Length: 117
Image (cartoon, rainbow, N blue to C red; front, side):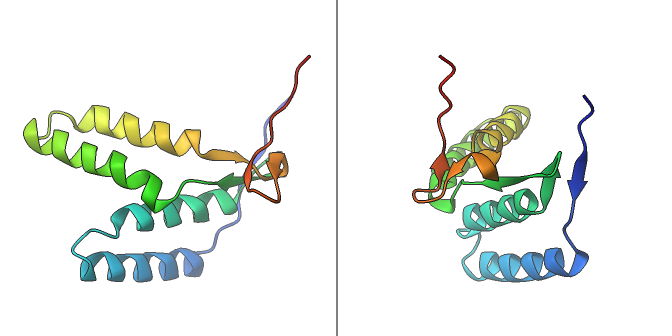
């Protein structure tokens, strides 16, 4: 079985996202970055399909804030040596918050549990 990956995003959609998230991040001196990054991941997932199944990203800026602060502190303390581990931590957080849209419970927007009994 081959997997078909499709990305349906547009340049204009990305440009608009980039403009407003960058603008707010600059105004807030970078404090908005976790929310901007979450918005970017949400846009990517919303426009990505695997075998005609849409992805959905459920992470939020407030969830990412703690990870981001830890990444910044450890990267600063280690003079950048923590960067490879920070990247892996970031990707792990993204993956843990990405699901197929058709497996989400519509009322609570949480992943559906599948019983394999």
